[in-house]
Length: 167
Image 1: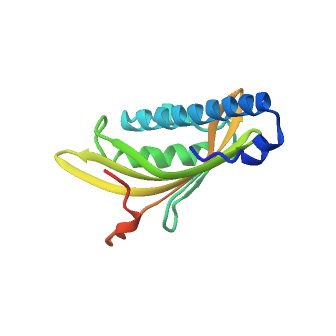
Image 2: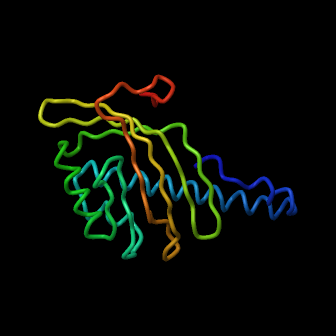
Image 3: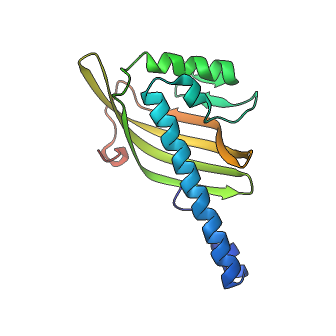
């Protein structure tokens, strides 16, 4: 999200307008980052209602994974998917660190990508995995909310060294 595309606009506007634009973009970056953190705190706590509060109030929100059947549309399906996700790890054991991200924003829509390393535990079993994430967010009631999210991870094969997120 740190690579918002503003160069053309900044060059075309006066310095004061460019400064105002930069402040707006920084606010967007900070707001989206806070939303991301809010979602992951809720997910870590197994607070599904908290996770759902990070999504737009829309019948066509979407969550998509990697494989067949990993496509959930609408609040009920997305909520059900998260309820199944949290069954795979104990509450308050998840940590996430993202890198290699990019994104942009235009009007009331922003989009982002990232490579994220996750750790969590189930009973005494720790696990680590890397997930590629992309998302589209919309501004709703003066706040950013996820509209669609896609995650992808390799399962059952070694990840290429060039794709590994830092730990």
